[in-house]
Length: 221
Image (cartoon, rainbow, N blue to C red; front, top):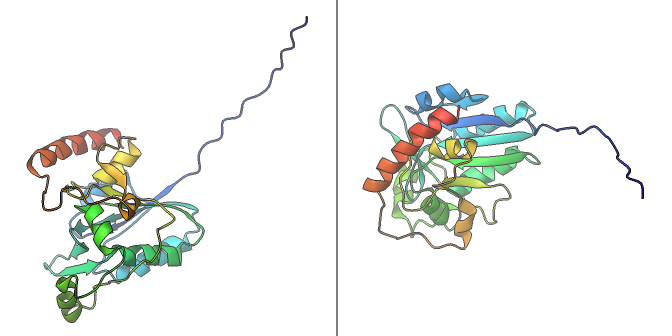
């Protein structure tokens, strides 16, 4: 019996470079300075999302991490430096990403509080009679954007669970550090019920999240 040993060269293939782009509510910019995004835009209102996505498209990148850093409840909120508030639906965000970045390898990170609730209530079914707040905002401001997305997004949308507040850019930091304690793919809420409707996990979770965020900020850089 003879033993044949075949010697070869093992080639390690580096994963493709992913490019981080951030659509950032005014006042949140300092959270991103140490992470050095490839592109960051501070918008005036939700109309600037198209400008943001056009710039990203023009770079020709194939692998893109998109972080939407804003406020959230039933809807996504931007608050400008003068205190003006603007709302958008999750359906609007998905529709416009799909419009501009066709065929790209995309991951979306939603830093909004109660992101699971935002997805569940505003990916589609955005009827004025269901949410009277829509009527009031659409009357007053042109920078609000409400659209339905009538299919399940093909790309993952990561965010915090439906009854928990978020701190800083902790969703992206959890992804970068492979620590998914509070992060989930919001598309699961296509079938999943909201967690503890009417129950907001706040005091304990905010303390825990703050501690996690500080740790992730160290190891995620």
